[in-house]
Structure formats: structure tokens, C-alpha cells
Length: 263
Image (cartoon, rainbow, N blue to C red; front, side, top):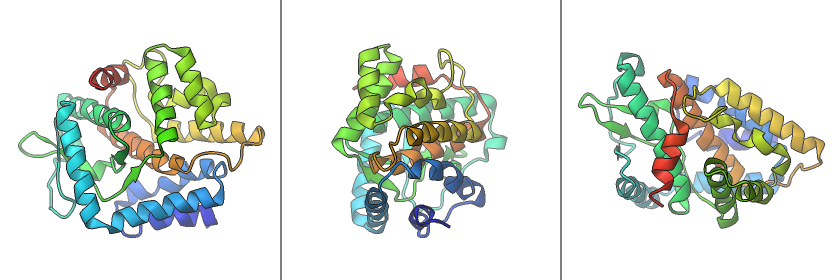
């Protein structure tokens, strides 16, 4: 295991998760790690581990996340990690329930990116689902990040520029992130065409990340990306794992616009 992989693995030692969730983390995150300077990777890893260890601070972050979702009218209940929450297996949910949950999760994803400077990034299938009463429940582990202002501003520019068709804003965001050469590849993870009927696949995400990594390495961009790409990569991966497990097509554009209009 490389030093990069050891840093990523350390993040999860205190937060065990099902084998199916852990198995893909290193495979998908590792390709982009060569684009991070070792000290950046270490600092982000240390921050995530420190955050997880501070239960009082995490309680505040979790409460803020719930308040943010309520304000944005995203009907997901955030529960304490220590509470034993029974979720209905996704295989037992009706298709309408799975699609409803997936649309809510997409709104959660965008809401956290556009509101505030902190995000809880644990969206894995074992942590988010529907209970017997039919409520959407999120029971995340204490895995959260405080985004650097320049990084999250650039991410917002990329998403907003893409969905509202502002090429100048889109390109500016890519440039600030240091992945301007990736162009359209940067948002392939959200599907092709109009993004109205997207099926999510971790395999597709992995292939896209490898293409972006190879492209930037060929342009001698190794060691130039923000440390926040580690947390963002985990956030994106957990989103894909969950949506893939729901086995439905989702309207990503609608979820973004429903979230974006409330900012």
C-alpha cells in the first residue's frame, strides 16, 4: 500500500463500514492522489481524522446540517450516529420510493455545496435510506469537512456555470480548480445530455476520474490540486454508491435547480 493509500485508509479506521462500501474507496480515490502534493494530502487527512474525534464539534455540525436541509426544504431527518436506526433495505422499497429518495439525496448533495462552508460527506448506502414510517433518514458518521473558500467557490462556479449555461463561469471554475484541461470531462459524473434521466455507476465515475488524472499528469499538473479534492472525492463517491444502489434513473438537473433557486 502506498503512502497515499495509507492516508486514505486511516480516515476510515475509526468509522467501520460494510465491505461493499470500503472495497471501492481506494480504487476510485487513488487515481487522483498523484495530483496532490503530499503535504496537502496529509493536511486534509489529518483534518478529517481530527474532525471525527471531536464529538462536540460534530454534534454542532450535524445540527447545522439539519437546519440547512430544513431551510432548503429537503425532507431528510438527520439522526445521531450512535442511535441504532433501522432502514428498509433498498431491495424492499418500491420504485417510487427509491426514486424519491435519490432525488432528495441529490438535493442534499447540492445544498451542502452551495450553503455554508462545511459539509457532512458520508452519503454511503448504509447511512441513508427510508425507515418503516416512510421517512428519509440520514445517520452519518462524523466525516465532515470545512471547505477552503477558494475551492468551494470554484466548485460552485463549475456546477452553476454548467447548469445555467454560463460558459464563462464554468470555465473560470475549472481554471480555479486547476482542471481546466478536463473541460466537459469534469461533469461527466452527472450524466450525458440534459441530465434528466441519469443512472449512476461507480465504475463510470472511476473511469472518468482516471481520465482526468491522466490528462492532468500528462500536462505536468502533478501536486497542484487543492487538498479539498480528497474530501470532495469521498463525497462524490458516496453519492454514486448510494444512487447506484437505488437502481433508478434520476433527474440531476431538476435536483440542482430546486436547490440552486433557494440560495
